[in-house]
Length: 324
Image (cartoon, rainbow, N blue to C red; front, side, top):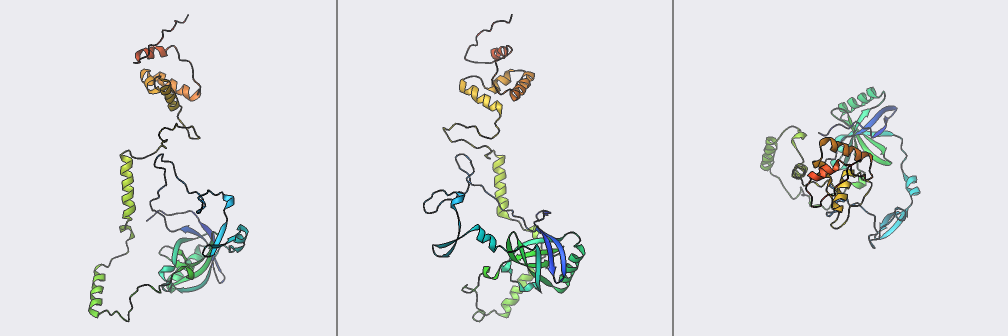
């Protein structure tokens, strides 16, 4: 199972009759699908979604875009933000139970999204009372609730550890089965022998509910591919410039040593790594510290001539005058 989410997503109360139970809602599910980013294969730069006119391909600004409802094919009516705001349901921060029904009466197609319900403030005792009552009677609370400006039909269901608020789909969101090629029981007959054999097979496969034994094999295989590529050094961690383009400075943090190394290569001089290799460790450390403090170029010290003499180079160094 996914780890528990203690973050409160909604705070309010359960209400039925004169009973008022302070509660909080917490996410009961976790999204574990592989998430991919769109990238430019030449540079590994992220590619974002851009609002464009589908007819002309012209980029649109936020101020040029309005919300419209298509009431007929290619016929729209626009709705202003003020009109949308006026139609929003009034939030009472209450799970208003309107009826208690047999949970088996709710078709599975109506179930949409579950939330764990936990007691808040001093709601522990009334919470437990309602939970035990629904367990004994086998009833679930049918309610309305407003979450994030949207009104939902919901079922308050007694769970193993506590209550679960299951957001339900509205009736007009569930498709009818009319027209589907479903079997007609009046034309198709099942013999007692066939039914008995099928029951025997079901009993042989009968088991307990063990969700941990099932895994998303597709996601696990993709994760394994990613890990193998990273281990093989195929991971792209740095944005690569296009061939022929110069690397432009940006707000990203660039190591000063790398800038100096590029400057030396461009001028035909020795790289920073070559100079560091020819200097004692103490001098290398002092040079790094000086680079952090003084970004501007400084004249070389007299001691640098010794290291230059030891380093192999095609350019003969000019002799320096001895200090007086």
